[in-house]
Image (tube, rainbow, N blue to C red; front, side, top):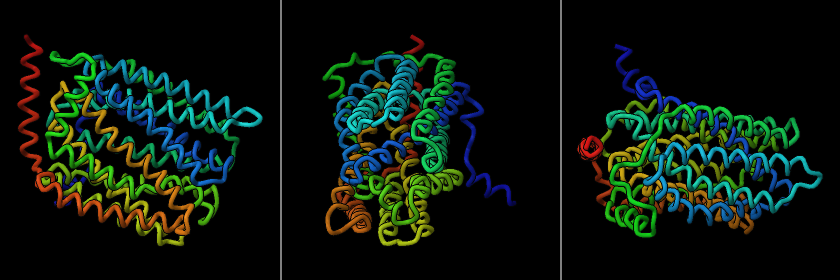
Length: 429
């Protein structure tokens, strides 16, 4: 009697058991992501230590946004034309080289601020090429029925990195030289490259389009024609633009206990996401995916409002964890909608658009929060007002996109099965 509810709520590990290639991608990506999140915390910390200016930290988001806007479209088109595994592996090699640049810069007598901005920009460009290929590759490694479980597992790997990486980064930054922090990240790339080398080739679909402006336009027209896709993009951009205060974490940490709590601030949302993911078994039985995305986005904003009003470390961490859990629920359902509704021959290009939706919001949100914090609102005001605007924006989008709010995942699953059967028939001929 007690085992049945546990199976309903527990994490479904089926894709890890049934797919060797997905297992390799999951392991390599989780370990590489762990190290990358250490650097993700360390670069803003280093900028804050050099400049003592929240706007300077927020500018990192601008440096990442411009190349990302361009390369996400390029990466999406390439992912629909080339072997997706090779694109992912090439991206890992390039990111490892950039981590080496950060290490050399940290070892210099006077580290260059401009180099941190350059590395942030180039990393975003590489991510724009690599991420669409990875997201387009994963659904090819599992069956349609395993997509909800795969979405949760992908989130789990990311959460483990977000939880462990920032927490360890806070400890390392408080105890050892900055250069060793970058060196740790560099070592994790070795594992991911070995795993990706062992993954079998993932060739493009038989009806792949050659990369061109026309092929990119095809992806954009398809996304615009599907209300369920537009809804996932716009809701996430709204939530992250108004409710992403990460640029303020170094300054919030000074109010709550100093550098030693910085890693806790970065890790708290991931802790909430982990709890939500472990109990994500229920998501496979919910079909109103659009409605769940809207509800989760509003709850994210509510958690950020709590962060802005909090003056205690424990309450701040609780609110961040609450927000992280809500964001994970939104992410799971958005991923299911993407996987169920996008044909394989368009998956790379649509993955590029998806990447823009979940990347531009946080990057612009960092700039917004940094600018508002320089006004009389201060750090706390910038955070809680952003959370409130997130809730308002979510309500507006719910009213403006009724078809998205009514999206039923059962129809999406039927469509996905039919498309996969057609793809197999074309491959056989």
